[in-house]
Amino acid sequence: MAETASNTAGLRGQSAGSTALCTVGKSGSGLTYRGYDIHDLAEHARFEEVAYLLLKGKLPNQAELDAYVTRLKGLRGLPDALKTVLEQIPADAHPMDVMRTGCSMLGNLETEESFDEQQDQSDRMLAAFPSIINYWYRYSHDGVRIDTETDDESVGGHFLHLLHGKPASELHARVMNVSLILYAEHEFNASTFTARVCASTLSDIHSCVTGAIGSLRGPLHGGANEAAMAMIEDWQSPDEAEREILGMLERKEKIMGFGHAIYRESDPRNAIIKHWSKRLAEDVGDTRLYPVSERVEAVMWREKKLFCNADFFHASAYHFMGIPTKLFTPIFVCSRLTGWCAHVFEQRENNRIIRPSADYTGPDKQEWLPIEQRQ
Ligand SMILES: CC(=O)SCCNC(=O)CCNC(=O)[C@H](O)C(C)(C)COP(=O)(O)OP(=O)(O)OC[C@H]1O[C@@H](n2cnc3c(N)ncnc32)[C@H](O)[C@@H]1OP(=O)(O)O
Ligand SMILES: O=C([O-])CC(=O)C(=O)O
Image (tube, rainbow, N blue to C red; front, top):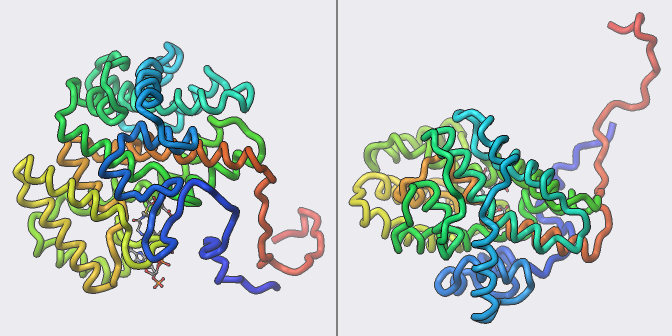
């Protein structure tokens, strides 16, 4: 019997292809999108500019950005057949399942007939995904059929407007903008790799994105922001949080929102979203969740030298903006969609079907047994 090659588990450290889209942790902890540093993008850019950068290959000039924002605004409406499907999905469904179904249904109604449509299809999903999730959420939870075609200038503002039924405050729109930028792209992470594998079979873009949504759903990946919130929400004080974390570490449980497959010392997105979480905590007068989060961060570093990844302070930041925990990972979808689609384009440009080999660990050759002789 062949031996398990444990050093290949999770394909860690192995190059599985090349990309011009993103660097992750190349010199310790760096993160760039097409060469632009994440700090510059989070400080100066609009998410729509970053989407343009990833999807069209360069930063837009003002006229191009204006036209792109107008274009996205015009793509927010949902076909009736999609609304009908969303209305069938129960309120207790997981919103990531709703996203997966919504994307797949959109692909049925507006099928990508040729790869020449890939840009248009990506723009459509970028504009329509906040509509899909919030149409379902508001219908199933509040019994209202919302008009998804709002006039908000940004994807993040559109999302919050649909969710709360009123335009987002300047602070909330700003934080959503930063959050969507931070989540947009991350090289060959699990969901993006899923999209690329699917693209490599020359499948359609909705299949690539639907598969990626499924990969992002899990708590070891995008689902960690939601899982982190579920972990910290009941802790009443930093001392209680410390006791609980020490207990979890003792029991060898995973602490959601910590650690990373690539970064070794820090995740550069953490300091950025942490800053905004603090601003939001001040805004809502929080004296519990933010201090609890900071203590968890300190204890994890002290005990395990494990650092917060992008997800941990997203939990408190989203919570302070009144976003229900179950909608955290769908927001990640609305952002990472841009990275997924850009990777699909890149895969298609220089395609070879992705098909690695495996080290066999099963039994040696066996004798065929007729069914009546089997135990
Ligand atoms: C947007 C994103 O997707 S970011 C990732 C979001 N996911 C999470 O936050 C879930 C919690 N974190 C994890 O499960 C992991 O850190 C992952 C999945 C992100 C990375 O997994 P790996 O690459 O296998 O982690 P890595 O090799 O660095 O693990 C080293 C050790 O630290 C431990 N460790 C890593 N993360 C954690 C954690 N969050 N809590 C407790 N222990 C951890 C591992 O169990 C491993 O211990 P071992 O050597 O005794 O088995
Ligand atoms: O890169 C990864 O492994 C996980 C991921 O998507 C991210 O951190 O944004």
